[in-house]
Length: 405
Ligand SMILES: [Ca+2]
Ligand SMILES: [Ca+2]
Image (cartoon, rainbow, N blue to C red; front, side, top):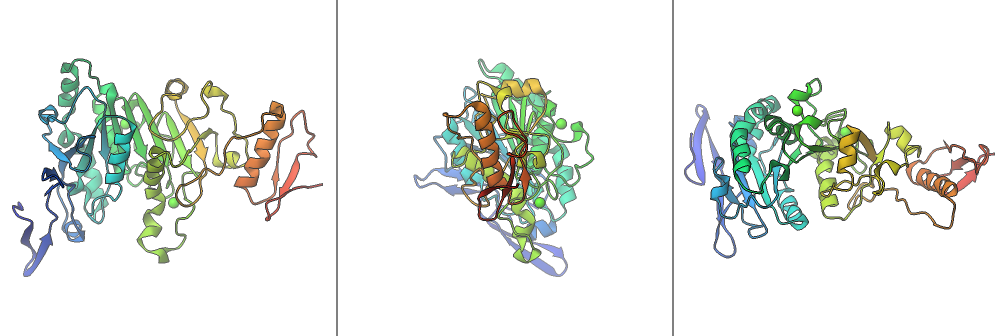
């Protein structure tokens, strides 16, 4: 069935006729330009099921609010697309309601603020909008052919003087993160960067690196985890894996099913909102290398010497201060904690007085850290400046440190 107008009807189960209202794929901008919109579907489409159909919508600083659909096999036929600029592909995930992701316009605008680039929104809403999640997962396997045949993409960059696949950045959300991995793997890992925002867990928990996002899929892979115990994927999958608040549950998200849809999606969606916040520089989310979240909370992971002269890695667009070090390290797990609402302030910053010698500063940092992170009895490790007994502290609910003995 093909819809030629904004409204089409068809029979699902005789004699019930379902009428679908489809938001036009094209609209006019304020200046009268013709714009291509993200595919807007509804629950009825999801119930009936959609087949995979991929659209590439180009945004640049010249057309930030007016997408232009690209020809899959002739990207450069659109005059606004320039191979001399870096290119970011934004790939959404499973869409159980069929509605466009609410964050698409935000991420387009924020990416354009970072630098002058081609921003290509990969609209695979037809395919992602299925009540049956497993159908959407199946589509991810054939996705890269529909997105833009890897051989074509490679030859496009090979032919262009001064252009390189290393200037391509794939940003994938949930299932989109694995899609980005498949595209990257088919390009032999020559894509510059893949950012995976809470890569999807269901159907991927036992996947091999070839079957999911992994560090070999691009020259640099950074991953953010926010819902590992539900819709996200456990484990480390990039050169750097950021674990927000431990990577499983997020502060401010509902704890009971009585909160409705938000109960299910809040932790998972937080990955997008944290990344937007980082792009917007509203929040500075520094990740501290650590073996576990528990050790992080106990302030056992404050060392950033590995990254000198830079500090510890910060979530966001610019990874240049840490990129080479992280590539050499192989895979690094880093942790940070946030508050439960915008601007998702980090609960800890590294400000300490320069008047103190380094060991005292370290102790003060640990005390401040525990003050912020824990509301339970805690023990600080001794340094040569303080005896073990001096470092026994208890944090009371009022927020004051007390000597325990
Ligand atoms: Ca892979
Ligand atoms: Ca969770």
